[in-house]
Length: 237
Image 1 (cartoon, one colour):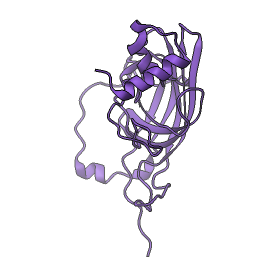
Image 2 (cartoon, helix red, strand yellow; image 1 turned 45 degrees about the horizontal axis):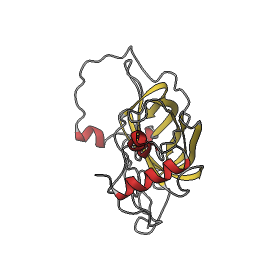
Image 3 (cartoon, one colour; image 1 turned 30 degrees about the vertical axis):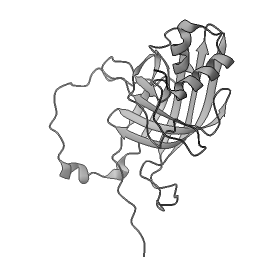
């Protein structure tokens, strides 16, 4: 059963990019906003020489005692990914995002959030059946990391498809030990129950919300620098 959101996305996509084809309807839906951005290859993403043996788990006390200023969360790179629902398409994502914790105050959070970030996301999606490419450039507003995985959201600033001002969610995983980097994008598997965004449009995405990195890179890769969630800033009296 196709949701109203999916149907709306499908109509917009088939009108602007593809010739009506019943067999491609479901795939077209997933590709509606699936512009991917070019991403730069991150040389040295994998570390085949690292030992794979188990290490003792860090205790809560040890984690709490870490110097949060010793690292800044970041994700950077570029890749062409393989999307199961559109295997013949050329989809690229590029990202350069850096954490700037507690830098963007807003009502209800005067100090900002620990996941505040800045940077740029670019994505493009080439459709071989039409020869057309959808693309977008978006400004990063949130970054969260965990190990070699990062989740970002970004607000579309320029695009030739979709809507300027829409927030999109992307996840990235750094490839290691011979495995490829990966990416996951919120519209690729359709956010059918995301409420509405600030513009009243259905399928809204909140900050730092994105699916798991489900799509493997077939060219290029990403590098993730993890940092623990920084503590709340000290309030001066």
